[in-house]
Image (cartoon, rainbow, N blue to C red; front, side, top):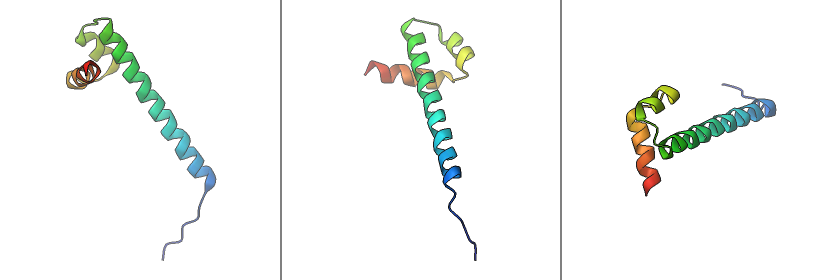
Length: 65
């Protein structure tokens, strides 16, 4: 039988890491949206973000609707 013990500090750290990850993702979305609004060439956005062209175009399409 496997005995597991609840560790509140471990849970707190997991929540913090998840929040940081979500914040980074929101910041990236905002940055790409701003670059698209500024009519930055997709090649530059790819180089700056590491996103694929498909990801950028999907976000661009989502912003238009």
